[in-house]
Length: 447
Image 1 (cartoon, rainbow, N blue to C red):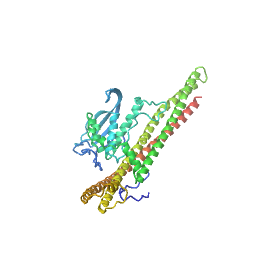
Image 2: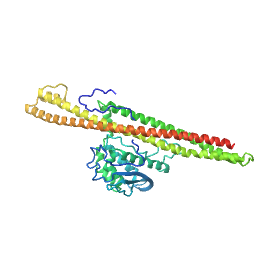
Image 3: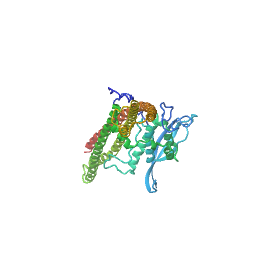
Image 4: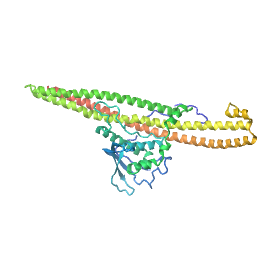
């Protein structure tokens, strides 16, 4: 891809953008294995070291969901779901295994963890959480977030979220994440003490940066467009799938009525009674088989939903880049303005209309001492501005380098996951068609 000519004040040079394409998390996750690329930013002792992280490998699972009743921050009674997180070390420092640790977490605590990760790792495509309330439902599914089937799917999604974070080469080393898995009491206080809320960028600031950046990076623009298209395509696919599931469910279940009719009919037929009874039985089996089929389909739909939510994680990285680029341009603009003011004071000429020029005409020229003091002050501000601009340039380059490395990791993860999911879905559909054909043949033999 051809790169646009960079602005003189804009020195970011990200790697070229390629078409978007996780390592397999599996059911076990290895955490803190001397991973390269530990974070260089974040709360003081956030990086895991051998002193504060004795476990080399741990398995993570969200094994159970439980409905509970308690009081919220406004002292009002509420019903919520708690999830049991179990962690077990595979290997200890002395080579001996240890017992499983477990603790309960609410969905809101998972949200708090992810919000923290988004703030302290803005260059990382942070794994998304499963939906809080059911989306793209069809009539057999409940939109109630307390429905047992939905809670079970969300439990699987939360486990997948933890496995994604634990398999990430940088996120897995974060102390707050480790405490989330191991410290039940006062964990919220610990994460709030990091002050991550104060570091979060406001939506208004992000919107302002989106429209006022003069030299947006084409690579991040294309990445944002890609995330929008990804979200649109998956949303459309999930809506179509919900409509198809509704119709397919109806077609299958209507055969249950045929089964009942055949069974009743067999009671009045002497010669065909056995055949009709057998046909009714096969109709009932056929009608009930759709429940397992659509349950399997829902699993693949949840995998697609994960990447629907990943689209927002990609946009979050793009927004942070825009904010940093906007701050850089504002710093460059402010520095140029101060240099111009200093030059005008030194030469005694005013190049453009300004408030300073108007006040000079109204109240007269400054004394040489006043002008000298102002020049000295501006020179100090210019020196500080140059240092600030240099710092922002270095920060920006480091952000782009780290962000693009993580985006490449995300490409591989996405291609691997979606390829496997779509192949498995196709195999499931072929299996379903074979079973249907076998059922028809058995039905014919009964007649």
